[in-house]
Each structure stands twice: as C-alpha cells, then as structure tokens.
Image 1: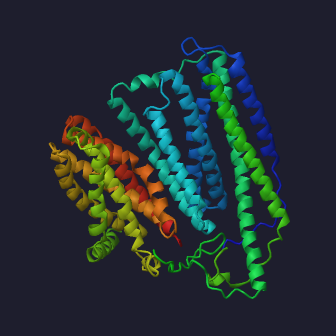
Image 2: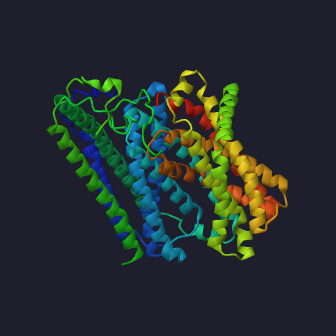
Image 3: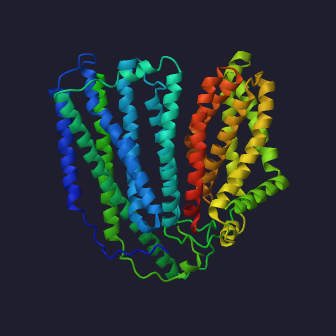
Length: 277
Length: 54
Length: 222
C-alpha cells in the first residue's frame, strides 16, 4: 500500500526554486531585448534571423533536456538500487514541460519556415521527427492519466518513456534518410541555420541559458504539483474511506472490479468483472 | 505583424501562460493539502483489496 | 529462457488455432483495409500501384495493433497473468514467446495480404529476397515493440484507445523503412530499397533487446 510516509503537513516552497524563477525571468527578458532590438539583422535573412534566439534554444530544451531527463529519470526509477518515487515524479514533470516546449518548437519552426521556405509545413527531417516525438510523449501523458496504483503507474510510465526515447534516434535517422533520398528536400534544410558571430553569438548563448532556466523552474514547480497531487489524492481517498466506514457502508462490493483508483493496492490482481469486454 | 513578432509572441506567450497555469495549480493544491484533515493511521478493509476508489 | 519462450509461444498459438480470432477477424480486416484504400484513392491503377507498398505496410501496421491487443486480451482471464508469474517462467521468455506468436500471425497475414495486393493493385514483386528480408526484419520489429506496449497497457480499461496511441508513433519508422524497401522490391531500384534494411535491422534488434530487458521489471507485481 502506498502509505504516505511524509510527516510534513506544511508544504514549503524551496528557496532555490524561487531564485531560479527570478533568474529565468530576467535572462529571458534580456534575451528578448537583445534579440529584438540590440542585435543586427542578418545579411541574408534580415530580421527573420531574430528567431534564432528563440527557436533553437526551445528545441534544445524540448528534445534534449526534457526528454533526456525523463529517460534518465525513468531508468533510475526502474533500477532497483535507485528506485524512488522522486524519479517517477521528476520524469512526469519533465515530460509535461517537454511536451509544451516541443509544441513550441514546432510552432516557432513553422513561423520561421513560412517566410523562409514559403510553406507552413514540409516533410523536412527535423520537423517530421519533432512532430513524431510530440505524439510519442503525448502518449506518455495519456498513460499517466489512467488511474492506477502509483507504483504500477510509475513502472508503466517509466517503461513507456524509455522505449519512446529509444525510438528517437531511429526516427531521426529514418526521416533524414527519407529526405535525402527524396530529391529537392535538402534545399530547405539549409536556410534555418545562419552563421552566427559577434553580439548574435552572445545573445544566442544567453537564449540557451535563459530557456534552460525556464525549463528548470517549470520542472521544479511541476514536480511540486505532482507531490501535492499524490498527497491530496491519498488524503481524499482516506477521507472518503473514513466517511464510508463511519456510515458502516464498507460491505458494498467494489464497482468495476479491477480495483483501479488512486491509492488502492495493486495486488492481488482481481479478475475483471466488467461486462461486454 | 511580422513573422518575428508572431514568433516571439507565441513562444513567450505560451510559456508565460503555462507558467501561470503551474502557479495556479500549485496554489490550489497547496490549499487543498492545508485544508484537508491530516492523514491518520489507515485502518479498514483496504488490505483485502475489496474497496475501490471513488 | 528459450524453452520458456517456446512454451508461451506454443500456448498462444494453440489458443489462436482453437479460437481462430486472428484468422476470422484480424485477417479479414486487413484485406478489407486494402479494399478501402482503393475506395479512398480511386480506381486508377497507376495511383494504387505507386502507393501499394505503403498501403500494404499500413495494413500490416494496423493489424499489428489488433494482434497485440488480442495477444493480451487472452491473458485477462482469471489470474492468468498471476499464474504465469507464479509458475516461475522467465519473464523474458514470456516476452519472446508472446512476440513470436504475434510474429507468426503477422507472417501468415502478410502472405495473404501480398496475394490480395497482387490481385487488387496489380503489382508484382520483382526482387523477392528483398521483400522477404524486409518483411522478416519488419515483422520482428513490429511484434517485439507491439508486445512490449501490449504488456504496458494490459489490464487498463482504456487499452483499446491507448495502445494505438502509444505504439503507432514508435512503429512509424518501421512503416517508413518497410514501405521504401518493398517499393524497391516491387518497382524501384533495388539498391535504394536495400539501404532501408539498415533501419529495419537495428529497429528489430533494439526492441528485441529492450523487450528482454524491460519485460521483467514491467511485470513486477503489476
């Protein structure tokens, strides 16, 4: 039984998270100011190049930071020596934030692509694999929402995150291959990567740092939400059980039969009694 | 509105809205935790697995 | 592990032979989908012939989802999964066995689909070895990844809608590579089709290994 072991009833917000949040805000604002006003336009792309301070950093966070972290955390959860709900919650937080960044990668990429290539969408290798990655991790979020014992859910989600992550390089290579064998696609890839120097390079670096900080802050808060949600879920169940017990009502047979609900024990597996399966 | 403006608005806007969303979710959950009764010892029939959640 | 795998594979296939669900439901749906593709794309022969490899593998892909769901539906009876676990069978063996059974069903399915495709779309396989090798590798990949996700969503009430969402994105590279490989085998240059085996091989290998490693942890007291 996932009995709550915490004795702390007051949730304290850690100081470091607040600091990270402030830093994230400041550095992002600085990036925007530098990116939009201080840095010069590009010779080829003119003002469009300003999107380079936003799109690649967002992509980096989504594809490497967020999903990499979720895969690592999932691995650490599954490995017995390091197993702890901490990793499960961290993975979940990381995936959710990662999905947001992933969607933004696609959005900013399309916005950059439209004036550059003339089309909103193209089956360019990077766009395609980013889109597929989004669906992969939406699946994780869908799996997460299915009610189950926290440990069962954690295990399923950890495996899901890992097998999705393993698929990423395969997707990447297949789609690149797909495009290079298909004539005409390589032209489109080139234009999104301008050569960077001077103040542009520093601003780009700042952009990476700023969005990484944003990511860290978001995962931190989302992690806290996960902890709180587990706690209120467990407490709510105990309250409702206590109420039922008081009413002398606990002989009622379980509805549904598979014992799925927040906080219910995962074993023994009951034979499903649902109708029409 | 230029593409650059659109890109920055959407990118930063979504991040900002999501951040606000996180803030609000955390706050409402913190309130829920503070207001609900402290977790007592769990006695009752859950051990036999016969009760399911709400 | 291998003996356990054979045991489990044998059990699954014997259940199939007796219940004939794959035969009477999955196979007809797959053939039906080929007909539906023709409805969707129009009767012009050259369109269908050009699209044939992709459509074939789409049909196989969706059949994989069905076959996988079926593979785990038969386990949902009274304490079957517990029984398997308690009997001391190596979980990796269970994985291999179930995947092998699914692969066998998919293999039979592909033979029938190939015949249907030849008939309905008017295409012919020029380079048989390429088609067969590609099928072999792709089937292993589909069966192993499918079984892994099947176990992951097993026992969940929403698994009918969840399993496709989870497994189809992962199988996308197989769809891509197998279609291109078969395109090479059916019409186009063999060399370009052949190069796609370099995706199918690693995919199959990766998910075979991942399945063997992760199936045990996944099934722990689930």
